[in-house]
Length: 420
Image (cartoon, rainbow, N blue to C red; front, top):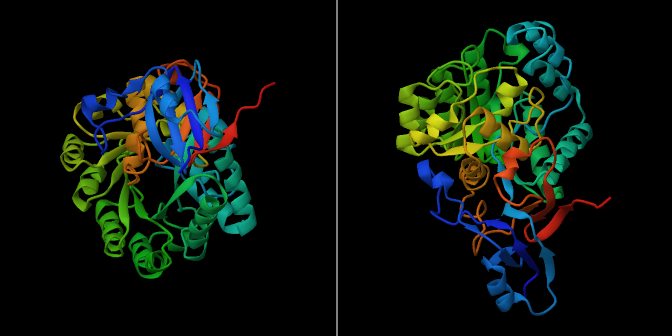
């Protein structure tokens, strides 16, 4: 097979070559950088990685597209392992309420919160739902994201929850991006089940999960294990039911209170525990022992005007493998992994190298895709992002702008910055 693409003369080619698994502790700082690096791609797969002179000598002949990355940094495409991509409507009015000191319950009383989006999403046509979600996805791709997890959770019934997952699948079919769908019916208790959380749990298990599994609409099942939402016992019941149907598991854990979410994630064999702003010491050590990924979401406290960011430094030092995600949702309308990386460094005490690892190979591991994407190595899919910066440390340092020069998915350019 002939070569399709060469990327040459990268100031830093950040390969992340290393253990074929999630990285923990000091491993997260080893980016395996090649200076004046090059990548050769054939059939959408990486076939060679090394210094430019060596790669050109082996692959420079013939009709091949060559991208000159002089003074630029080349990374694996960003993997966003936690999003609520598919929904309708917006909640921009909440920003003023937050600025005036209103809390979550007060915002709910004024018509905001998750149930506002549930109402908007239930009323949206399938076409509107696809169009609004696609616009967000296009922006994510332009910022370098090539793999996206997409949760349901704004239908909280049977019909709309299935529609959300169907929309996620359609987006993956029509856009140059890998979509990983997650069922999150246990996101909140819908109005028709108010005061009957156990009844809603039984409804999900008997009426919705079997259909999701039958139609293969979700790879993961997630639960918002939180005070006032779903307690540990209710969360365990949903997760084990999903596991029995062949789904992999995730947990929204210890975001606002220490509720035992981290311990539950370790107990049920979840792939990841997400948020982790307030995990217990026992929960942290349980995650580390079981190699459960910790997915941190710094955009969430930022958009909520909270001072309670997850302590990335402590989690890493104690051995929890850490990934980063945008948590894109109507409360945290963050479409950029670049911004997420910057927040992680400035607010969670992560180093630039750790944040890059958390947004590539570790984020891929949080979706079970670390054997396919997340590093620049032979045999991996050619999902790559070319950044207009001389080194990876500039990524969190130079925030507030899109640093992408080009985004490559499966060996083909899917977005390129246009010159003035």
